Image 1 (cartoon, rainbow, N blue to C red):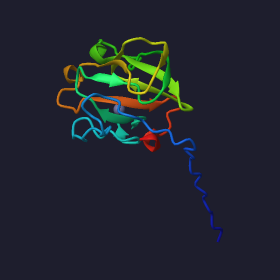
Image 2 (image 1 turned 30 degrees about the vertical axis):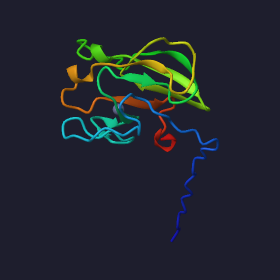
Image 3 (image 1 turned 90 degrees about the vertical axis):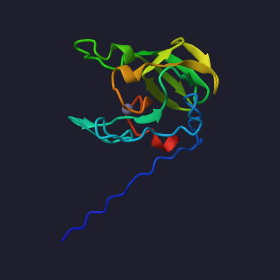
Image 4 (image 1 turned 135 degrees about the horizontal axis):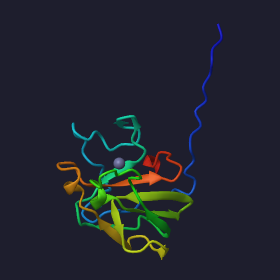
Length: 155
Ligand code: ZN
């Protein structure tokens, strides 16, 4: 009998980059509460036709969103490439940025601007009105790495 040994590579977060506060009113970067309608907000959570590729951090509609550390803003993001009837248009924005050797996007944020550098804790935008699209959900910023890897180790 052949026994296969699987070696799990452990990602080294060598410089210890951690996300600072993302959203006003959520200093602990708490995740959103799972619900029966929309599922859970952890990375890898079940979704129709796949899994959740990001991490959902609670953020009330209209709240100020902060740079989680010193970052360079890369560009604006369209969250839903195929929003057929425009139903999700009120929340269909985000912003991509790099910093601390990471590249990631924040979804559902109206960016103040989409280029230049900002320092940790500086305002970068406003949480869009998620309740108008996903009524009853814990409104949240979706944090997604550019390579769609798991952002959880950085929280
Ligand atoms: Zn999400």
